[in-house]
Image (cartoon, rainbow, N blue to C red):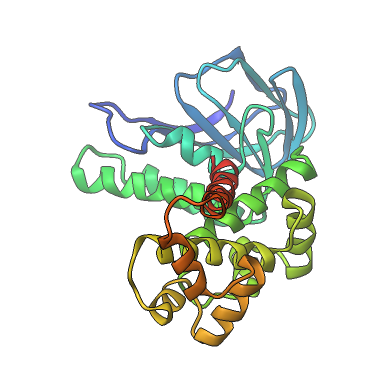
Length: 300
């Protein structure tokens, strides 16, 4: 017989993310679940022992330090080992942002397994949920707070299994582009971008060259100059203000970068735009539109 401490939380369920159930189990040899499904997300983390998971047409051997996801309405089977049955904690959860948050950790039906050495923290989070089991606003907020902590441990330090190098590379590039788009107005450097996505600068360079045909520095400069060109066209701000608005603390460096990309100074570009819908004007506008579309495509 499985030795389990499990709680199902009832009542009206609504909100961005909330706990449906949680528990701690010390299983007997060959103890199993399924094939069956749950109506909500469930994540298990193996504290000790070993077993196996079958889901999505694949089987995964699992031991201490590994965890696994079962998405809602997905048929799954898992079983403890015959000689070294596992002990695990689990949390079931739902909410308007549940799918989005799970996806952001890298877990999915095709990548349901993760590995991390944060076992004690997983255990403490679930233990705290079990200790605050009564119905009250305070306890509900506390349980949901522990759920966020539980998921943050996965996002922070888990190594997602079975995830292809191409998928990981695309994810790094997407996050780097998001960071640049959100911070181009600040004097950021490529080391700041690499630090944000948690990879070294040389690897980020390789990923950008493979994905976009340019280096991260070239992308940052191109995005800044593209935004500056927009401001020159649609505002009457001084060139120095536009430079500062696009992350350049030195107007001379801005002018040099602008001339290198646009083949004319910022002042000359503004005059060219003010002449009306000339052929050259249309070509510059198309360049701006094409570049912005490229960025939007990466972020979609």
